[in-house]
Image (cartoon, rainbow, N blue to C red):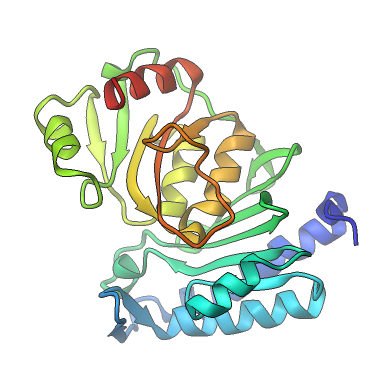
Length: 268
């Protein structure tokens, strides 16, 4: 099957509507009624994570069985096998922002991407609490609730910007530099990587920094920002997306001018 199947508007609508329905049934319905377990890496696992992954995998396998499946809750062996699939693979974070979800903070999302031959060609990030569907298809633009999404802001200087920065995963020297010599106007950290990318695309923040994201965290949001016209790289000035199960840093901005100024501060 052609890798650009989602240029078919019926298939595209089926995918988006399917994820919205699953997120409402498996995630939103469990919000504020949560019991969580602690995984071996110290992160949380809820019934919503488990059931959203099971039901999403079943939905995808039924409709697009040619693609492998990589979920956050899959084993590392399963993840690497899916990543190496010649036909491509879905990449799912069933609840991005589980820590928020588990304690009743309504900032979390479902993130789904499709990678083929090392390229992200589809990205969906659904925010159940706000009923916001951010979505993108490679070379076809980004959208928010079916309306064109373009990365833009009236802010022209880094000093005017609101930043989204995850301090926890930064090297201490960089974290101290940002804390003591902040080049922006204000700073936020919301707890959902996928939404961070989308909110930069929507201009809700103008610059972004994270020290270590997994591919299921960033894959969909990265494409949404890319297709909206935003820019990104790693702290090593490499492309963020790699076809490997490994953590990556992320530097991003809404406009080229802000991206240049932000990189100049972070990577002098």
